[in-house]
Length: 427
Ligand code: CMC
Image 1 (cartoon, rainbow, N blue to C red):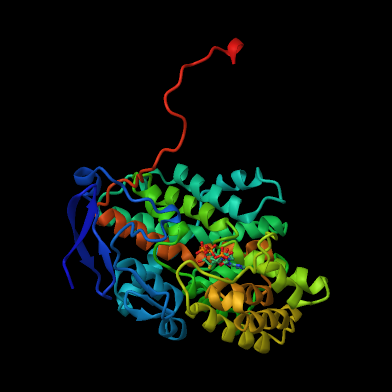
Image 2 (spheres, rainbow, N blue to C red; image 1 turned 90 degrees about the vertical axis):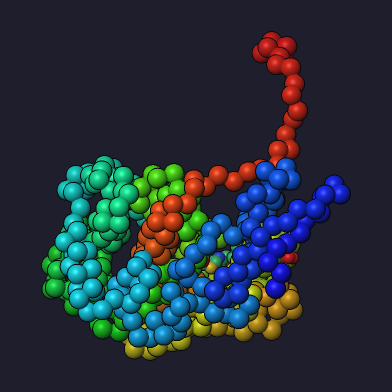
């Protein structure tokens, strides 16, 4: 392979180095493009732009491959638990027993938030979307943990990391408890990370808490499947905000806002709402397939398509199987599961979807499991955020350790040229 790429412009040739990753992905290193040729690249939506080199997650959209630190997602979802995966993503290796015990203990020690935070939560109306509340509360955490912002050593970073891993589930659970008019509680040191989260979310003040193991296992798997996905919209946001050295919590808060949108993490809520709408309309999947294909109609088949996966989303395969298992184990019958399967079958045989390589993505079946687990629809994207937290942290840490420069894209200006100012009376 040639080690350089040549660009010809205005009769002059420019050479740029070519970078190759460990999975043979190649990229042209254009750092010197503007300096040498006076040009920039234009790539709205960054469809062809690599914003960084990263050693965290590898995905091959054509082959449907997803790996965290070299481990196949299928293996991790089957054999690891969420905190092991979090450690792997953040620090690069699966933990040995002592490392996992220390990590777990350090997180547990941080699993409380300042009581004053309750007043902030109190100020939100009950109707507020949990993602907005969670983003605000995560940002508010900075005021109570100012030392988390200015981190330059690995040790200071570690402290900020275990703090957010400990406190975030409390905040997520509180957003749900506020909605459900339940008292704001704390977790139980003796429980695992995921069971503790579940307890904080669902424990009733008048009942002793118990949960089916199948529920915790399903939740653990869903969190693992969502834990990282390289340079997607929210992760890029986290790296971008973090690149200004605004601190981990501010970066995560911005990531939550980015994830909220229906084209990103908000799709899991949008999928269930769409399936419900189809059910209420009489269950005619064909009618909605036609709407999705009609360019005059803004309707899109939510949970279908992906910027990177153009074959299948490996997470969707695991989740579809898991949805069948969980609903079976819990004895839940959900008619929207049949509608989802019907839509998938039709789309996989439809020319429009086949040609555009639109396959079910991670969000197509996850909402059905969340619903079976008793999680309200508006909390679905919060569950995604809980899963994505280690990925955001890992990406932020990598960006800081690599001393990446502040993110600052360029633009091609297409506005007015210089013109004379007219005073108000003569416009
Ligand atoms: N339903 C109908 N048509 C679609 C859909 C869809 N869900 N997705 C893409 N298309 C069409 C689109 O209209 C376009 O057609 P044409 O070439 O004729 O103009 C073509 O497919 C390419 O679409 P695009 O919007 O240019 O693709 P993109 O890479 O910019 O967008 C996407 C990717 C995920 C935003 C998009 O597929 C979509 O809106 N899907 C629905 C929302 C969704 O499920 N999002 C969750 C993504 S996975 C979870 C996560 O990581 O965030």
